[in-house]
Length: 337
Image 1 (spheres, rainbow, N blue to C red):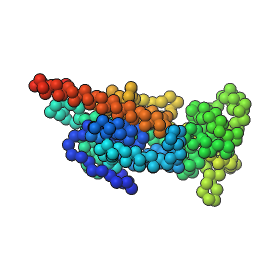
Image 2 (spheres, helix red, strand yellow; image 1 turned 90 degrees about the vertical axis):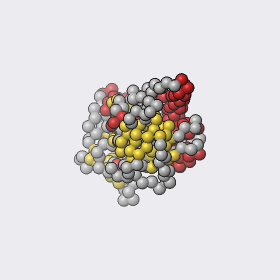
Image 3 (cartoon, one colour; image 1 turned 180 degrees about the vertical axis):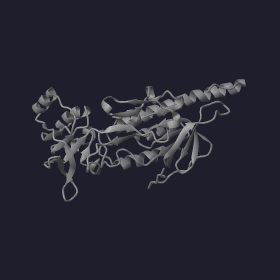
Image 4 (tube, rainbow, N blue to C red; image 1 turned 180 degrees about the horizontal axis):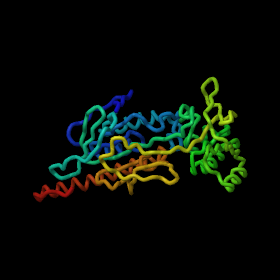
């Protein structure tokens, strides 16, 4: 596994055991760390340096910060976490697993990074985000996050009134088409081998959505590299400036197998996520999840809110554990984990 590098300063891993390690440095992870730091918890964020929205020019749909560059939001978030004593460490988690029982029988987890460094934490917050899986159409990935988009709320206003194509990937694409039709009167739906019943065809026709059943062969560019349209298997090129694609979304799980976190498949092959309960709790004691790793459709604001809730819940659980330990010590007893 390659060692992650970043243009940003990386803090040193602390010695000893910290209260919490947050795996993932996006909106969910940073906001979780912020809440923990403000609660005077020792917290370390392990940032893999590859956020989902890195290709996007701006983040939208989050009041006050709407239109801000994603990298600027992360820069400011890291700065604020550090203001409360949190540490931001750039690297990839190679393994994370429960540690041997401690002397006080409290929970412990050991994380090892790809470069061999390790850290022990009492609690974990998994905020690794997700990975978008695009259909295998030549030329499509090169435009991802620019003229190939997935979310009408993240990118819709910026592509309004343009000739938009929806490249179908499954049942989710049907609603996708109607959402993008709200943004333009020039919408073409490429079935690309997916089923489309007569009722849906009638609904699309009523909204003026053009349907093309001929399979797509490749994405075609202008000479300057901008998207020109889609070439069909018969050779015809259908001009489009923007393509909307409902991707498959998969929570990032690298290095986390030993935690044995339960996962769930979404319907219609839309993706796979970590299962979670209230405040991001999981079936694994001491481990929480937040953001796109468990809520695949969450935008930045929702992910940040989930991280804040998980962080505050982790602190509350640690408060109880600390109080139990203090009481047991006062009584000369051994506390429960």
